[in-house]
Image 1 (tube, rainbow, N blue to C red):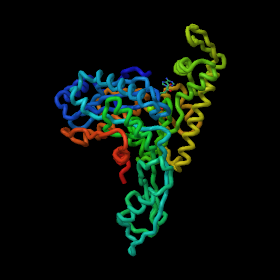
Image 2 (cartoon, rainbow, N blue to C red):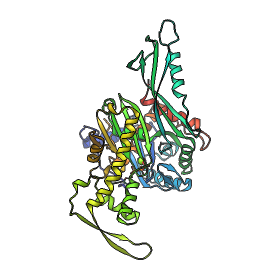
Image 3 (cartoon, helix red, strand yellow):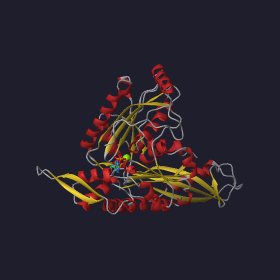
Image 4 (cartoon, rainbow, N blue to C red):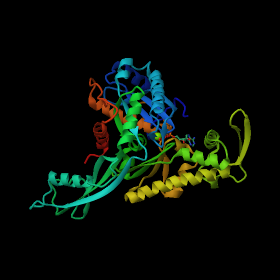
Amino acid sequence: MPPAREGNRPARGEKPPARGDRQAARGRRQAAREYPPVIALDVGTTKIACLHGELDGEGNLIAVTGIASVPARGMHKGVVVDMAEASESIRAAAEAAAAAAAEDEQDETAAAAGVFVGVAGSHVVSMNRRVSITNPNPDHRITRAERQELLRKLKEVDVSPDLKLIHALPREYMLDGQDGIKRPVGMYATNIEMEGHLVFGAVNSVQNLVGAVEHGGLRVDDIILEPLASSRACLSEQDMRSGTLLVDIGGGTTDIALFVSGRLAHSAVLPVGGNHITRDISVGLKVPLAAAEKIKLEFGHAQSHLVEDIEMARVMVEEPGDAGERPVTFSRKFLARIIEARVAEIFSLVLQQAKDSGYLSSVASGIVVTGGSSQLEGICGLAELVTEFPCRIGYPAVAGSIVDIPSNPVYATAVGLLLFGSERVFARGPSQPPEPLTSTLGLWEEVMAKVKGWFGLRNKT
Ligand SMILES: Nc1ncnc2c1ncn2[C@@H]1O[C@H](COP(=O)(O)OP(=O)(O)OP(=O)(O)O)[C@@H](O)[C@H]1O
Ligand SMILES: [Mg+2]
């Protein structure tokens, strides 16, 4: 479990804020509490993280007033599998974060605020498509009608009836074979093509998530796809412009977001993560899961060739029932081989995803790995070996703000949710009450309208 509060981390490329700046920020906060607190809820497979943030009068996120992280129950591979258990964990995380924030917040405004929730799971699927039409206008001038027709064709795709289109994102246009066109209306061409990214989600999975959050005593303000949230927290605008592959390796899932020319070109959620590494260790070393997790955190390494042949480690492992403890001795190199095999498989899957998307050659800036499993020693080295891209760890950061944020990669999604939420709360205006989703079930259109809104923030055409 990550510590409740992490040390301060300066925003990317910036100096840590001076003590005077912090005091000034606190003064500004106390002077103007115009906006309700922003509350982010990351419902992960292994932990539920809840963050409370505060905005200044200009909409800047200036403080994280409450942080809580509790073990997740009732979750599997990023989706709710037991509504009662999941909602209990959500309630516990929300109450702990609210208690931590209480001295900074007015209780009634916190209670009224809705929460910004992340959605993931392997039910989220995406694809890239290219569609074309022949310009029907005699003068070959492109109007909005042609753009609309292309969008309609882009959305016309045969998928399972359980899946619903979350969003259709036009990325670029090709006019008579000329690519790289962002705004075609007003230009002239005979053959007009549109390339776009489509994202689908399973209706039931999203509804179960919203239900668990509401049963946990919270109101859902908005829903954001988790790979987008993690990207928001860990990537700079420059990263997104120059082509970056974000990989958030959590406990049950690996979330992928590929950005090209500042826009989302591909997204995916793979049903594999740190829990699989732990399970492999449990089988390989013949120890219970809890001991395997402890061994992974304490002795794990993702690159076996960097571990000495003779390095041995010893841990005490609890026997089932009252049988006490027994010592287990193992070779660290053998442990690293187990871990390496699984992590290499994860990066191979990620690479395959990027290849299949058709955008691999546009990834100029490399890979950014975040999420709890990114803390595994040697993970970036292995990512570089498997993918042949430069790699760095993604630490959540808030550019240009004086703010205490949890810089541990385990909080990447939660910090991203807080940033998206901040924009939404500010855009709504100081005196505007939140517009939470009003009911738990049967509100697919409402949920999806909100998800679409978030995509639109970074994918305007
Ligand atoms: N120091 C560490 N070394 C290796 N693995 C770690 C370390 N710290 C945490 N992890 C792993 O990170 C995983 C949890 O990460 P995270 O909190 O990002 O997942 P989650 O959000 O709960 O799950 P998901 O996003 O998959 O639904 C666990 O598998 C845990 O073992
Ligand atoms: Mg996660």
